[in-house]
Length: 99
Length: 189
Image 1 (cartoon, each protein chain N blue to C red):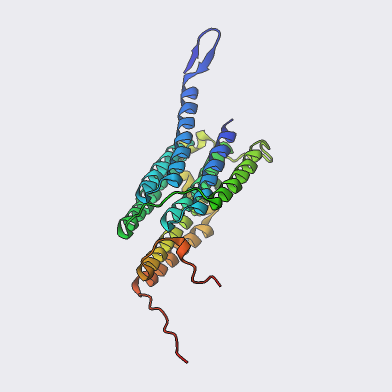
Image 2 (cartoon, rainbow over the protein chains, first blue to last red; image 1 turned 135 degrees about the vertical axis):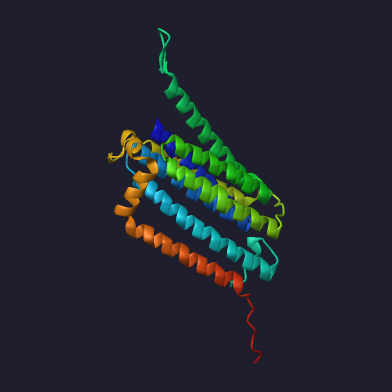
């Protein structure tokens, strides 16, 4: 019962995050959706590490947090640079590389 | 605490624990929906903070105190404050939410993925492993100390690589933020 609950919650949050990443047009909200997906995986790892009595899941969750922090910082810097040069925050308008 | 009503007996602590875990999981899903469906970015950020706090409480319920503290400090503290600063700097404009074919395609795709993930629930435990860290041992050593022992003995190299990754990210954003981008001049020929 407990493991099914963990799987269900983490699958739902992951799918909500993926949906938000595909649908939203603001790059900041897209980054928040990526955070949702990373957090759902963290929740799955921690729940299973508690039910399997092993600490490896918690260590892996720490690594995911480090990667997520680095990713957010670099991504926000890129968004800020794009905004400084284009003064526009809609990802649908960023199609200069389209052939 | 076991409560016996004669025809029905239950453990009050256990039933309260499960109720709190279910309520926190439901709140986490609702907050995630709020992040995706809210049209103003600042409300999205606030919903995301609520989601992170719910997850930190769930980590506490599953006996991972250290990760819960890290979640509150790193995510709900540092990362979300960074998000709020950037939103305040760039000016969060509201986004019009209209339902078009693109969104319908995304919705059906995500529905398929969710159904497949939900099917994986029925598989059950494939290869049950049991570690040595049960609740009694973690209570003996202390959660943070147990994680530290694991981290610095079995997982030392990934830990050092994570620190290198954070250093590279710091140098990278200094390069991105310090030097302003000049668009390249086309040579007229």
